[in-house]
Length: 233
Image (cartoon, rainbow, N blue to C red):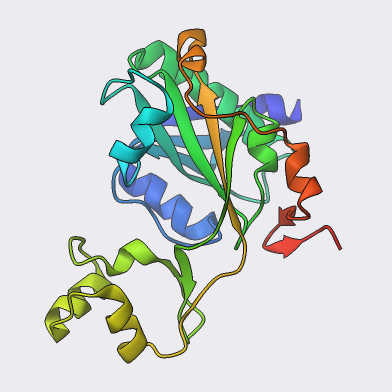
């Protein structure tokens, strides 16, 4: 039966975090995920999907006019073991969307981002009925001199974490000054970010305020990415 044996079930965030740290390319979790699914195959927990509020929700909400504060979520993380059968991602996404429609009907749409700097351009989303709504040159994912790759938001004085905490401890209030003086040689990763939206209702799709971009545009621009490598040659 292969991929048809895939099942998803809500699991505790702590358990989903363990899976993400084990299988996600970044090894990092998102703190504000509040819908967490385990991906099971033949009874074994081999993947996780985490949904939650976007980092900057006020900027995301206007993408679909008249969306209520709790009317959308972001698919923050997907992490799957290589032991899962082919097409497991699209199967799991389909099951997750059905669960959300049934159990959280106030949610009208889901946004997610494909990281073309470190991973891919969103092939899984394209196979799962998401719409491509933005292609943007990366300006937020950076690489530190030790090779660690982090989001620029990790250095925001308003956040908690080892980098923002260290900034405060050292008396810095400007992220770039902190990076320049404490991590000389840091750089913005070359690549693109791709924004995708999945509409759970037809009404939400009609209220979309942006533009739908054909998937072919990615190839046309020569920015197809798989596992962080450009496959356009």
